[in-house]
Image (tube, rainbow, N blue to C red; front, side, top):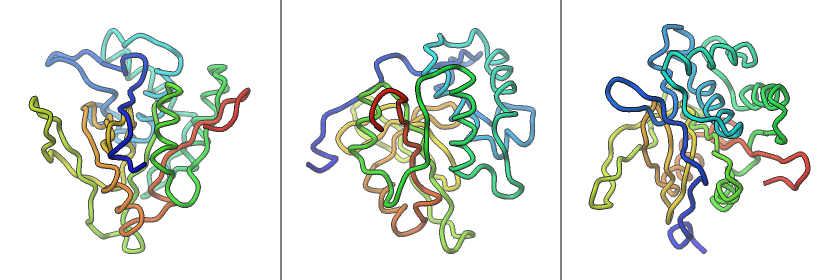
Length: 222
């Protein structure tokens, strides 16, 4: 069955919402941090922090300051590389350190070749696991500007292009008929699976554009 014909799946609990003066953030936003490294290269750290918060069953932080203090405690577990941010394998390594620290019954690994299939993402969501996803840089031309488009869902159910990016981590929190709901920069967006897959195959590379696959310690790989 094609992704467009699949059922709609969402997480069983409400995803992380962080209260602000203007409403709330849908997941963390690296751009609000004073730490320059987090602000410019911290999307992987924020994605990891949000997924760990969800897997621990925590309620939403009482303030953005509380959330930022939580991220600051996690930062030593994750390694940034000059001019390259955080590769997928490094993010997974940091995540595994955190999963052990929090005694969570999972391990995580970088996706295999080719880019993880849509049904693999659905399976993780069915198991109530948000999916960390990398939209890598263009490859082999790393200075290329081909993007993945982010959409906002309008009240009438249609989708409108709202942003675009490359070299960025997001978290998938739901899927419906070929559309993936994501958290990025503290906002709820949607990406189209067919466009993401095309980008991975034609404009990037599986070592850069892929998903982190969660593995349960006492169950088969998801």
